[in-house]
Length: 287
Length: 317
Image (cartoon, rainbow over all chains, first blue to last red):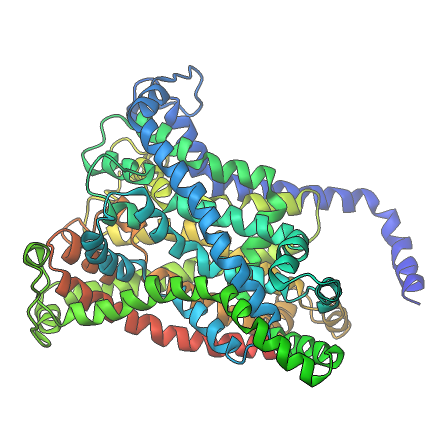
């Protein structure tokens, strides 16, 4: 019946097909305009990074004579910091997944009595202001000798990731039919084997989503870089940018080049792993 | 939804479960393994969330300064730190700024986010691609956004003032005048928050059945009317979640403000979290910083409760 109705509706619509097409082209055009306005700052960052003088006063609207001076300086000054950020972020991903994935599975599938309490605690932990954690960790790290250390930063950065990873992976794992795991158990696989050889492969997509976000969270971390490092030895690039901003900025092209380099992971992931990013964007917040 | 799923899974598996005796034996053998699945995460959450919260409470009752790091002594001072916070002439300004920053950011993000979500709900060529590209500002490191906006907002050479200048508008001292700095910071934070709002609200819009609009259209409810009488009521649970989460995330914002203004000019953009940071890490008055951050926690907690209620309602409906 529905098909009859649509057919009826479509007959007159067919006559207006041209008009209809114009209208949807109009929507696309307006949509592109909205996106252009929203992403203008990103364009401006790239444009400013390619300006030769390093001074926005003379910046042209298009980088017609692109200069890579800014990038040369950014890599010379911030190269080691970029490497530090990369190492910290990659290890944070591994650490967060190792800690959070089994917990997510347990909260999704084991019949613990206190599941709801645990979920509540995780939700609330996400709401604790980072400065609270930094205040306490500074004192603790000072005693433990973890200030200015990569392990210290990794452990702290995982606070951005672990609650999120648990929640998003649990939301996925709750849909895994128990029968699949039970079948393996009947064949004699232990809990751990069943988890590693069955649950994890099935959860591949959610693992990727969780891992990508853990990376972005850690890569973007500024608060712990700011509070838990005090020397140049261990310095994530976010702090490098902040230090550029601390003094009167005289060379914008180097600052913007560093900003562009720091944006590459986000831009690359948004383009190459759109599916996973979209899944994480909706999954983590409401569910 | 999650809860019903949980109970159904539990019920289904208990129906398939082997006879009770074997099950009990299996449980005792497996009890330890099962706990090992959660133990690392539980330990981590206790050490990196539980401990800091407790430590902040004790710190706020102590004279905890640079000296403490050398001598290991932090004398108990009762509520003196809180007294110092309340008596400081930056307390009320920072409370007001926190409120203005939060309300302004949320209002802007939400209204623009809802408008964009509704716009992208229509199907047109590239709609999905354009919508997912909108996520970019949300994924960039906040300090990168701050740096970019600082160059855009520069008074003499920034592109925004150049643009406004073509309409004959005098250069605005966005980040250097105490009168406008907070507005500038709010504008940037709105930009940062729009993608999150679009994504969540778009998800909510997708869940409203088309039949409701078809039925509404028969009754003459289209356009604005349909939005008021169909979209808004059905989106209500999602809206409350977005707003409350927005508040919880916004009151703790640090990166954006530090990157743009460092709390200045003339303390015009001081918020509770900036105060907490500066007391602890600039003045090395950890006790006072902890007192500020405990006030922040208290406010977050109120909204956390509201969130959980809103979320439960969203889950139930």
